[in-house]
Length: 344
Length: 171
Image 1 (cartoon, rainbow over the protein chains, first blue to last red):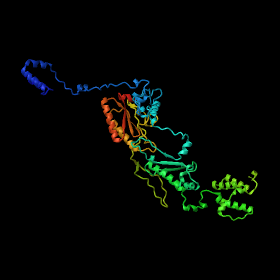
Image 2 (image 1 turned 180 degrees about the vertical axis):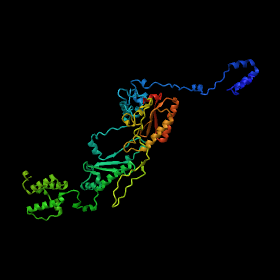
Image 3 (image 1 turned 135 degrees about the vertical axis):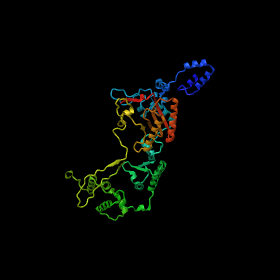
Image 4 (image 1 turned 30 degrees about the horizontal axis):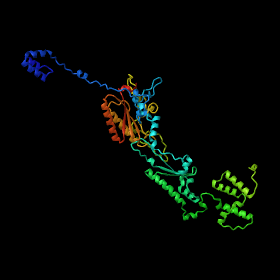
């Protein structure tokens, strides 16, 4: 009968263990009796407290001590921090602190300090590291030419300057459209031009010439690549230079109205001066235009001063100085007395 | 972007009409996200004063460049900078990917520094997983990010024992 009682026990519905007991009971009665005494009633564990206790505890990871603590004082820092890197407290043996705290407190230390990780550091650019890197790339450098020892010498031997910009920025592409722009500038005085060619050159380049600095500047941004723009500005300079030396047929038709500045020798002022001079000396007046132009005025006293005064008046425009100069030059030419200061 | 739904109706003035220029109120519907300048990026004080804040959280946004620095370092915000929107979107993507991949482990903001085409991602990580897993996650993150963004990505992590190490103060 005991067999059936055991079978109906709550919590043990026909599992293997009970079947075995059943079988044993059939063989030996005495053994089964003893077993029954040891057996405990199972406890219904609704909250599963036992399982929860069995949850694994967090494994303690064996953490090495800081590398900074074991560093010798005479180590080569360039080997510890060879390149740019985010700040790492265990590799830097410096008692660094960063952060804003109220007065009287110490700022946060270097460990677990995000502020130190944010800022760019220059730990890879210590003076000895820079020195060794410079030594390493020195073999690729060539010696500076001895004759180019001053700015003037460089300017004399290399009059053409090419100015381009390189852009360095953080993005997946290294291209910047602004890098295509090429400036080429050259001093006008370094170009081999005569009077006519210089005039024509200035007319050709237009706004590219700056009178104050004497620089002719060509800027090109019309092509997509820098090389193409560089070729283009070189072409512009070459073309303008050679074109300015060409003399076209129609250029002979240039009359006095087309002149870019006042030349006294070509103008009516000289003609009237010569006429006046000849009339004073009771000479014949029958000169051609060329003769007027080439007439030597050194024979007329004070004529060179008059020429200067008229030229400056016409070229520099009317102002107090030029007008005064002109007045005194005329007085000298005609032999009149100087204007008295009291009359002013 | 404000879409004005009701426009101010100007009364047409006739020759002999009495001038009536009383202001007509116009109501507008704002479709942009609210700025919330007063509360955004700031944390409220709890009753028990037990809310942990990191240094980053403890300083509100107007202290950027005074007490704390930026989390993204790149040149696109400079004058005539290139790829502004792309950079911002990529940074947000990297942040989300990092916090998702290192789930529950990132104890600080994800710092993204760009140098040339190189992206350095820095963060403070909790030592809650085994070093083997950490190494796997490191390589996994670098590989996937560099494949998506098409430029070299380096993860430069610092580890701490628990979140308690990065707590600056409790409010």
